[in-house]
Image (cartoon, rainbow, N blue to C red; front, side):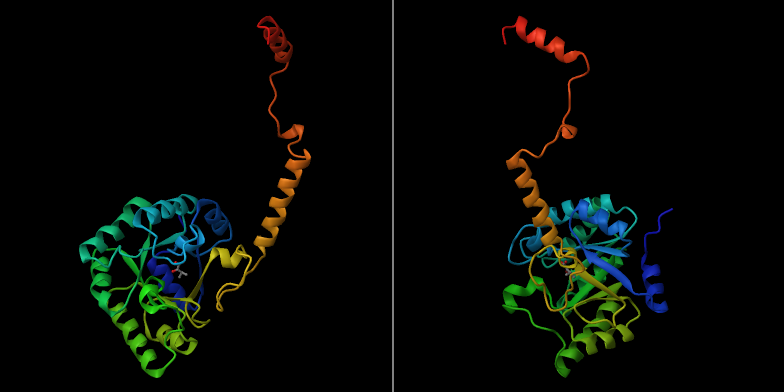
Amino acid sequence: MSNKLTIPDLLEAKHSGRKIASISCYDYTTARLVVDAGMDMILVGDSAAQLMLGHSSTLPATMDFMITITSAVRRAAPNTCLVADMPFLSYQLSISEALKNAGRFVVEAGADIVKIEVTRTYLDVIKAVSDAGIAVMAHIGIRPQSIGKLGKFKAEGTTSQLAVDLIELADDLVEAGAALLLLEGVAREVAKIVTERVEVPVISCGSGPDCDGQVLVAPDVLGLLGKEGPKFAKSFADLSGESVKALSEYAEQVRTGVFPEDGHCFHVKSGEFEKLQKALKSKGI
Ligand code: KIV
């Protein structure tokens, strides 16, 4: 039986004060580790454009790319609640495009929830996707897909006016049908108010500990990047250091002939080597 968390389970977690542990990851191998760690929810974020492909923003993530990596994560995590990130231009053009693309994540990649970065302009998109029966996570606060317009990111909800706007937007998104909210880079005090006000679970990405759950990207959690992540991130291991050590050791052993050893080799079957020698001799080889 699947123990995959559903929207009612996530709601129950909120109401009983059980925090939801979530991570953004992008590939089969990492997702298997995430499953073994017992994570509640996996997000396949469009930050993959930066952390997998090396782009400077999330904007180059395409629908086809996101479908490919979301399916890979789903294969590794058949029983984990899976959120797929709707990439830039997958929902901005029209409601029918948004519905088609949200549906692709469910049908082609096995996602349980789609995440959409929104402003007030996209209330009708949230409503349409939710009315189609697809659970939506509305992502507000810092919205990396708006980098072109904003130039750089800064914390959100840091003045009383901005905080009121964000709190009202959160209310309206829930009213429109959002099943979860994701707050990125929102002032802690404001994130707490939103979390206490709304009925739905609120996941924090850099918005403090008072939300119903947390999400960080796997490369930050694992310390894979070899540099400090954003202010709100924390590394729980130094896999960058460990990985460089292992890779250097491998290269060294190849160069010095220490690797591979006989135990890493295949052999011709017993008795076949003599026959091989004879066969080669008869052919003059
Ligand atoms: O793209 C992503 O991984 C995200 C999380 C950082 C929230 O949106």
